[in-house]
Image (spheres, rainbow, N blue to C red):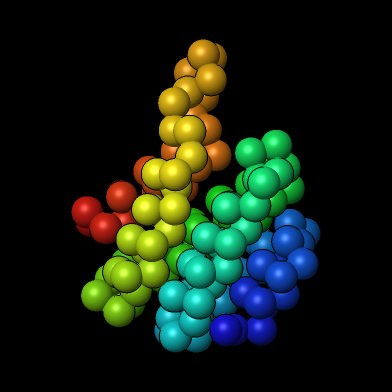
Length: 118
């Protein structure tokens, strides 16, 4: 996995997550499936739904990953990892909590579906 992705995901370092956007798409393309797997692990943790830091890190990383997949036209290469993450989201509550706000797993599922369908 790219060093910066590894750092951000292993340490759940929100302060460095934005730096992922300074990397070239081609530079990170080879590590996107592994990053998606790490996101699946993070989002499957027991406290993910209540951990704002982890949710923010995941949201930024998914945005960076889906952008790189679109820009490098590598959906076929990373499709299996995208679907595995999407399926893991289906194991959680996806219904809004009454105030028209999507749950953290619904946000992930939505981003992945958008990437797959584009």
